[in-house]
Length: 272
Image (cartoon, rainbow, N blue to C red; front, side, top):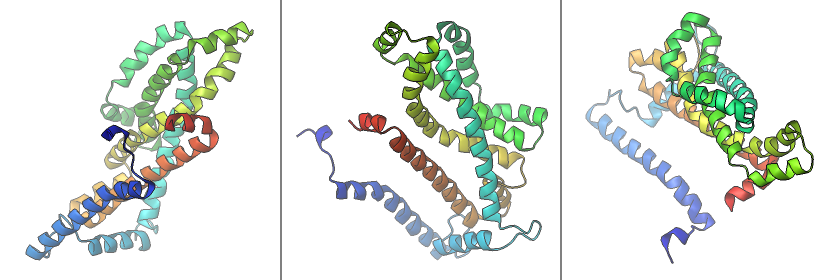
């Protein structure tokens, strides 16, 4: 049997899924232990015990200046910003993507501009946002919107164009107006695809958020990472990076679950 037709059994699949994580974790432990045997005060690769102690301090010790628990305050601040940015980007992209994809005049008018705008590096726009909107929340949320919305719009436009032409013709033959075609033919099929686009935008969204927080913020996960880097506090930086990764993975899993529950027909078609 060809290797492309061989599928792992459920038990073997779970083992294969966990294996890379176990190997990376084991490799880190081995290298960290070796470095600390040579230099017990090494700060580059802290031990698991040192990272656990650092995170325990961030999670359970109140900040003397703010009276808050740093890990909780940073997490809530970052989640508020990224959820706001993604919500705005999703609302803009869904409507605009469907309109541009359906209406030839709008596609001709707006798609080249959206394509060009999506090529602008969002991080290069960050100083402009700080000048225009200040260093408050608006600039950080706007950076996430600018960085993710054009990509989602372009992806949805392509998905609309891929819809079978026969569906549109049948709907028009039955007397459906453009508005009815949008609501009853296009929107139901684009909604699950919007979730896919949103999932693919999570990584860039976190990148833009961390960058904005690192430059101008008083709280947030990115702010904390760049604050403690002055002290070479890798026992805090590495766990914070892992925590951000875990949050992104949870977001992705939640979106995937929502897609499977709300659009089982789409998830079944994707598996087949």
